[in-house]
Amino acid sequence: MSSRTYGGVTAERRRAGRRAALLEAALDLLGTEGLPATSVRAVCARAGLNPRYFYENFTDLDTLLTEVYDRILTEIAEAAARGVAAAGPGAGLRATVRSAAMEALAVGAADPRKARVALIEAPASPVLRARQRAALRRNTRQVIDYARTFYDVPSAADAQMRFTATMLVAGWSENLIAWLDGELDAAPSDLADMFADAAEALATHAASRAR
Image (cartoon, rainbow, N blue to C red; front, side, top):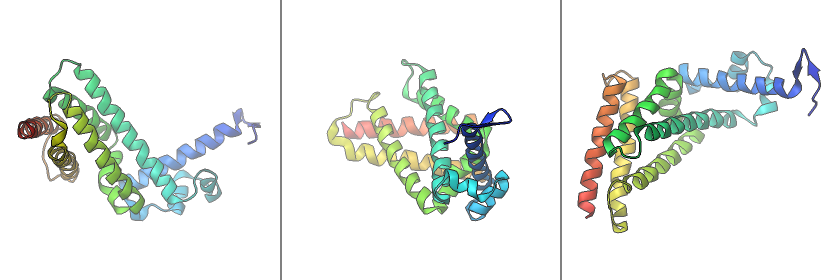
């Protein structure tokens, strides 16, 4: 790639800027107008770029949407991890889950487009729907592993733990969608409280059944 400089900006930096503009345009379209309005042409128009610059950075629309979605999931996962760390090693299950939930909710509060893409628009896209299902399974495994740090659960109880963790993860997503749609009237702190209460109750029940 040429490293020639125009106006004090190298070719590499100009290309990076165009890529960032396309990602932001796709996020804005997906998060405000939805998947049907998100096309290569619409993304380029929103970014103010010629379509040739799209194909300079992405193979097709699915490639772009995948990167937008993966970036959102990474940001949410990193936020939840900060919440776990902030709770501290001595915190109980409820306090730890609540702290993680508050940090994850803060991502959507800061940019509601990201929440809508992750929860509402992703199922409408075959490629994103597959990634969403993979993320649900991954999060379910993480919940199981995490629950074992609080409860002495025998490995023979894997089916019980997986069933419970899936109920928790899928239920959290569905309640978030209802919250975004205005069907669940709750402040973020109240939502985090309800999720933490549910996590503690389900985990305690599953652990007692397992033993």
